[in-house]
Image 1: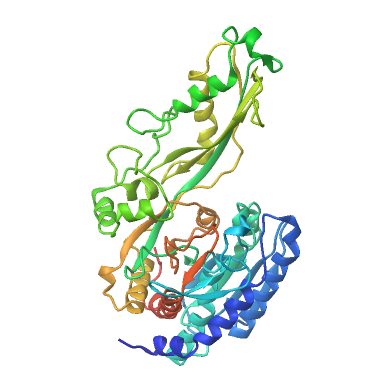
Image 2 (image 1 turned 60 degrees about the horizontal axis):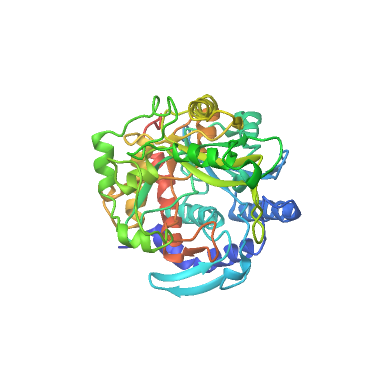
Length: 472
């Protein structure tokens, strides 16, 4: 099938490649202070690209951390809805560098099993997902013959998402009047598979904790004191082993009190998503077994259920040879993924209650749960904005909107801040795939996915303009 939007995108792929190649060469690693000038250069590059695209208002917004980029293009149509596109221009560190097949900031075209790929850090997370909006806007205007978009389009691209967006909520509150919108279009996600058009409809939240257990005042000789005093590492191992029960459920008191249960409809929609568990295990997971909370599928566990994971445990002596001691301290880091209606602020009391209930005599505990965290978020499956999104994705993939599947993102981001501050509903439009190795060496984007993403953007502005307000 063809359309004016597709024809324009197909005729201007070289523009997309040139833009993305130039942007990917900027090593905008927000986690490394040494790359702060590169993050600033990335923001300036994007601002210039938005101006070239035609956005009449483009500004670089400084924050207490890295700069964000804002752009706005009003519609000539009275009463046009306002759509805010969210993305980020910072990228993850590249370590371990030796595992990259090509230099991470030298974009490389590779012919893969599913078609041409572009390899570079940020290829899909998130510069590719943002760059497709540049071509998508041009395609929308060319296909409709308009001088302005059919909706008022605002763009906000932050520079600290890969560092936890520490200043993003404050930026939203400070600039709320400029950012008011009817719908937020998040372009920092993807689809289930190359031939499975889909839309993310939820993202999990995140909270973390660090636990320190103390026994003796100093490290002790294990021959003189072993078997006679509590060992903090033994206590930590026992504590962490109690984090889940025999059914794979998290044992923190009150952890599930607010969890919004999946409806039969939601579980049926998730079951429609093709998922080869054996291939998943053999792929990036590289795991021997799928496991987790009983009563739920693997897709439900990794996208729609809350979790607790031990990220690290240390203490005592770990150098060469052996050192016969009873350590004075043991430490562990734990993170929790949260689902709809759970609140990061509740975790502090829950973690402390769990530690207190499982702490052996003679051991003292310090529990640190940082304030903040990331709240979960979800889209309304039946909103007018969702209908417009499904129509746009369907057209770009030659499918009926009813055939576009719903997926859930197991990761976390600042999307809940957008909802809380702006009060607008979310829809997600991304071109990534689970196999794109985001945050890993050899990150890639499958280029045909990026092309279809640009076309879907072009359709989306027309579709959003055709549905009544409010878009929720």
